[in-house]
Image 1 (cartoon, each protein chain N blue to C red):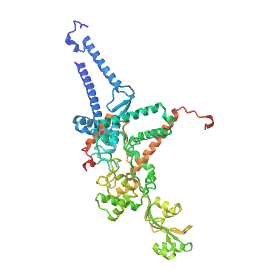
Image 2 (cartoon, chains in turn blue, brown; image 1 turned 90 degrees about the vertical axis):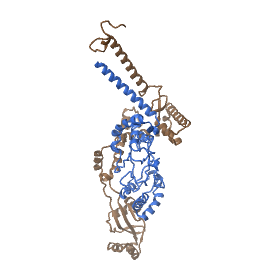
Image 3 (cartoon, rainbow over the protein chains, first blue to last red; image 1 turned 60 degrees about the vertical axis):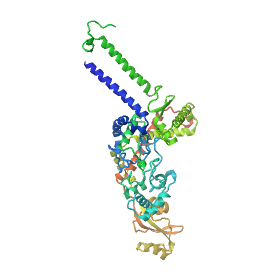
Image 4 (tube, chains in turn brown, cyan; image 1 turned 90 degrees about the horizontal axis):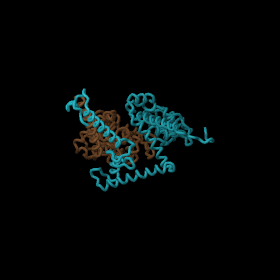
Length: 245
Length: 299
């Protein structure tokens, strides 16, 4: 009788393995952006994606995925998406190829220049700003998000923003950012770096930023990448701030 | 094959008794499982030829996969649409383009394009360097490593110094008196008027050190940097007269603590790791390569 049980268990394990592979195949062939409508596939992906997230992503994004503004690690549980619109496909692309990851297919289009350095713009020829210019820009950004500010400084800062600061080039004329290149919205009270206070904004402008997310395409399988993307998508309600607006 | 009459039909379940039927069933099961595993491996293992397109791909071109995620990115880039909202014609167009590209890349390999086209060679070198860098970035250094790096290179991490300095120019015969008046606390504009000087306007309001250095030149910047707020430099002879630097405010660089410098520390740490890996890889490539050098160029 014992060997029958062993045989039964073996067959069950094989059947489960085959079933998992089949479900993975269905997951991979599915349209990532409409996966949420398929409850069973979504559940499967989230169940498998969670341990991958905790093993690979949580060291930066935290176990709950809520990030760390002191290190510029984005919160993945809110509706504010730096790259794309927060769809599974957008997230999957980041997991696949990373951000400034040195992968040729990664998001490498924009870097926040350090405007308090001799050569902030590299090849783009952007000129450095003076301490007073940066203070004025800070006032302008505080005005944009309707926080206390110096009106005269904000008026000067608006001119710098739209001209020699070249901030508009990435963050847009209305300072609402551009998810196509990962330029943050500066008007939504959500700050990628720091607390949004004067000192933190000054430091961002003065020293710049170039956060990095590795490319996982060589480390994780396609199914694992899809699973972790679905899991990350599930951490927020899947809607982006851009869509809510 | 008939079962021995001494073995009852139900005895095949009893492991202690010999059963030909059990042996046959187990052998058949083993064969089925073995065939299943071999078949699965045959169609899925890397490097094997297959007639089935893996689920993560949209096509195989001479067994070279075109990935589904690249297909979706291309669809988005070309038609600004996702899979659900794309038309069959759009999907077909993207697929055909990608297959065409793959075919041409494969033909380029056959033609050894890298051997003749300098642009392709440059792109290949850059791609390998990027690949090495990408590997380095996948490994996230722990906080202890970053702190150790920060401690070892602490001098690098400081804020940029700032100064507000006026560069006053006087006739050579009156500079010493003007310096005395400034040091005695007289207002700069009054001293300019009294001793016939003028403001060179080489500096403007508060400036970062690097900007002041560009505007003043190395020698004058060094003199300015050494001044405390309210200080006046020694007379500096220039072709247009004698300059006196009147330091309104000097804020030297302030060392950054680890939390403030962390991002720069991480960037520097990664850059060094990338450089180490590139050097190591190049050494490895050279070691395994058979490089013959002409007699006249041997070191």
